[in-house]
Image (spheres, rainbow, N blue to C red):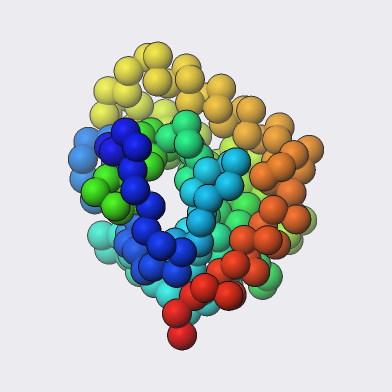
Length: 181
């Protein structure tokens, strides 16, 4: 991972690459670099852009913007309507930049806030339990990321910035301004 990565110019197209702890490929998202703020670096995906992983491909039903937290411990995606998920936070390890490309290790746990009345919760605990054994997650990382998920669930529930509507609205406007046609 780059210790002090250079960011592309706002508006540059990128491919955000995820992998699993064991090194296997996971999601790849076509996106555009939007910029940075005190919360971290932001990328976005207009409606119609693709995300894929081995065996699955999806098309964004609505514009979305994604925050890459400087801690490298999470990546938070904010979806415009009509997407059912308002916020989808992937708990991560070593999320950041590698040779000008956003990357991260997906650590299974997710914090989710929906707009369809299902609320806010920590998702994929079953996958977390399975993979922390199968992949041999170090105990210190397990304890740290479980706490990160709980902290994020509280922050999302209280709509604490950057998990407030205004922060997402700002970056969704930047996406609309910067996204290539």
